[in-house]
Amino acid sequence: MAKQISVFLENKVGRLAHVTRVLGEAGINIRALSIADTSDFGILRLIVSDPAKAYQVLKDARFTVSETEVIAVQVPDSPGGLASVLERMTEQELSIEYLYAFLGTRGDDALVIFKVEDIAKARKIFNEKGIKFLDESTLYKL
Amino acid sequence: MNYWDKEKECMPREYLEKLQLRRLQETIYRVYAFVPAYREKMEALGVKPEDIRRLEDLKLLPFTTKQDLRDNYPFGLFAVPMSEVVRIHSSSGTTGKPTVVGYTSKDIDTWAELMARSLYSAGASRYSVIQNSYGYGLFTGGLGAHYGAEKIGASVIPTSGGNTKRQIMLMQDFGTNILTCTPSYALFMHEVMQEMGIKPSDLKLKAGVFGAEPWSENMRREIEGKLEIDAYDIYGLSEIIGPGVAIECPRKNGLHIAEDHFIPEIIDPETCEVLPEGTPGELVLTTVTKEALPIIRYRTRDLSTLNRSVCECGRTHARMAKVLGRSDDMVIIRGVNVFPSMVESVLLNIPGVEPHYLLVVDRRGNLDELEVYVEVSESVFSDEVRKMERLGLQIGKELESALGIAVRVRLVEPKTLERSEGKAKRVIDKRNI
Image (tube, rainbow over all chains, first blue to last red; front, side, top):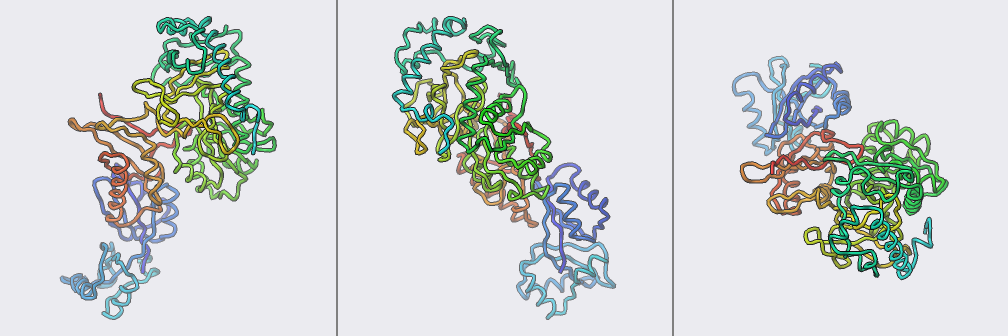
């Protein structure tokens, strides 16, 4: 389980730089990020070292921000590693809204952030199928 | 029921009309004698003051427009010598020469009476603390509301517009009961209150008297819900006297026009024919007690309807429907009349969407396009693109069905659209027509 910070961004010059500057000045480290974009706007998704603080400083800087529950999954850092995890999720009909990769690794494993429809179900399946995922405290410290 | 002047406000229509006719006739004699521009216009139509025998004869008289005030800039339409003029107000003149209006000391007193009536109707009394956040200066809003509040004997805080955080601090510390400002500024104040962590329950605010720009019933619900107050609509324009021309009573079912001072008509803006009671059209006002600047049949460009039936509140003065557009704010897109207020109504009906918007009209090739910018608030924001696109499409679809033309919706970051402390700018027309 992990908290992702999502930020609404207009497609305008300098908006992304502004977000990252605000976080940097607050001493918050970005651990993973992805941007989903359309022609008018983008949605920036972040895993940071201190989500509560990040939420507050971005809100104070007048961004539209929300907190989203996501899951950080350990995936073998070898060819076919992600495929095997995804196949097991598909078998269990666990639908994925989106996913993106974490900037660091954990031992021999890569880390992938998943946003799924049903988090409780995901946890259960991961436990049963032996898919490793990280708790919040470990994740933010990586 | 609170009346400031029950005898005038509840005068039976029969007496009211006699009073109007006598005052109208006096006014017409006066402008014919003292204002060459009016005399010339009347002569051109072949009308003499003695032709005005009944109230219906009003329709024989020429109209006055903003252009007439500009053509006679600055004091050409004044009906008294400058020695009698004690106050001059003026528009900002952003679209040309400003329009200048003057007041004798009796005019100032009439205006204060009308504003006292208005504030009283919204529940003010000598015990009220009234925070006046209309701009002070050349704009009539600030001083108009100020004099009325003092006339009642209320305690006035003349904050004027701007410096919103300090305004809210004073509102809390001084125990403000009644706020007077533009409706868009009231909503802006609420945003700032949230940022400051101040809740409506921390304040003693009971009512607001909001005007100087058109606002919808939905916006009223929004303001009343967020600030936990009663929101009253006040109408006025500097050419006629300033704020206080018309005010809502607690029934909130139309604004009572001070008919002992102004005669209203509704006309078709295209043909200029007077329309029957209840038919929507352009509001036309004639002043019948103004000394310095009497105005005959002023075309306000505000769209409304009239209802002359006696109100449940007991007042007999005609009610004008809430102004929901201006015949000159209207943008015509592919032959369809579009008013910013229509967009506002649609947005306020979508849960979570804030009424902060901007209409941008552009011409691509030969086709006019309407783009509506809407701010994304936290309550509608989602981390999923699909949901955000669905929101944009939903807003677009609802706008299309309300306006009757295709609309492109652009979602923008909150607080990026201009927050005005006076009148909000709602339309940008990029077409070069």
